[in-house]
Image (cartoon, rainbow, N blue to C red; front, side, top):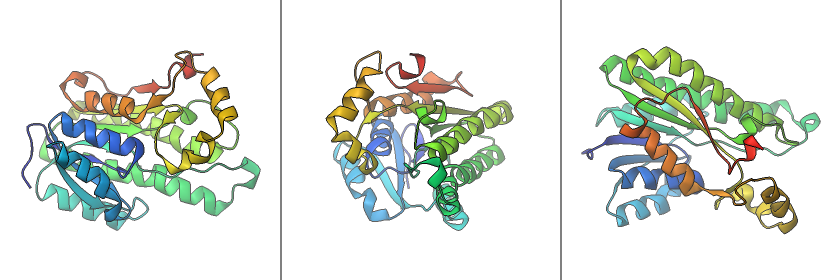
Length: 252
């Protein structure tokens, strides 16, 4: 595996939506991008788009619920080149009344969204520290990690945990020149299956749009642009921050 000018970046959950947009933005910025999905074949469309545009892409399988899968991926990538940028995007959603959330629901969301993301971040961070290398880690949280909403308790709690993970590790790893930041998108215009039902409801979408000061939804490309900025030299002095990409929703 040869690296590009920027080096190797890893983006999780890059088969569609935000993850795919982030991977494409990093590739345009000169990164060689490793992209993951639970099933490697789900990476095909993103990989094809990146290579068709002249970028370099390595599709990989990753199950964040499995410590063995995390360890195997990091070892594989590091045997070829250090991962100098990591974008934690993969996760699962859950829309359910809090009183109806089962222990199984809770464990599934936390394991994929928070636990797995922490241990992947730990694995990459440990390698960087041992090698004496700087790096940038960007974690995609959500406006639900900062604001209350019905039927989003478990998901929101997991995303709030990611924000605090970023703050804690930014302070701990700052002396090692490893930067960690979080992005908190609001409602997005993406092709995410989890948004298909609500996205086809004009009444719901109109109500959501009325709450956004800019009067438009953000896109996966907006998130990708910010992730690429934070991963690159422009973000060299930014760490421990939570950047809302929500059209002003969290300020209203």
